[in-house]
Image (cartoon, rainbow, N blue to C red; front, side, top):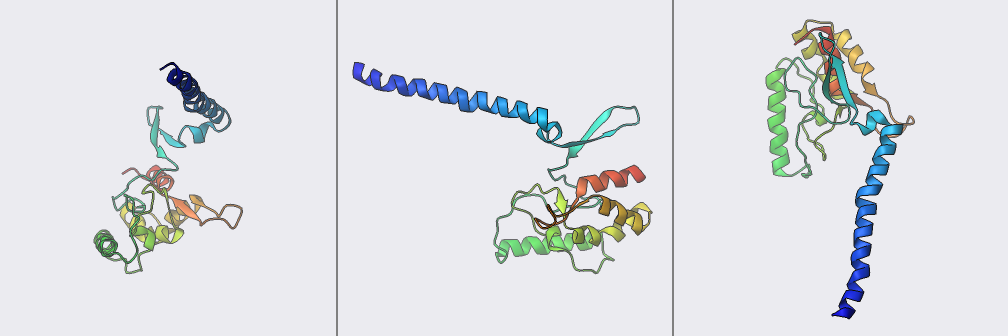
Length: 188
């Protein structure tokens, strides 16, 4: 028994020490440094707006997709994750249902629906859509809100991120930022 305790004692001490170091001390230090150097990002990149009474209202995160389904808003990717094969029957049926939904909220739009509007992402929380997906929705938004298409296009352009270093990734339109700017024009 004494020999077993001699073997277990260093293991238990090491376990407790490494748990405290890696599970408590290191995360607290890294989080503290992150809040000092990158306070906005470490805090979740929350977008706020000022209410009529002067209070700040949290609208959502710039990096986590919000679900918008009303036709007066720019609508992002479908929520929920998807790791389905593009040729899986379940995926094909979901895409067909989503195409029907798009036609129901915008029956006059005969343009081809961009793929990112009918397929979910692997994470299910993408905050951006492609510029093509945003352009597809311009006429509907302008008509419902009673504003010029050029105004909607300018807002979308202002909320479009470019490729990182000019070649990495794809341009993306932040759905939440566009919708907040649209709401600033006229309340819904």
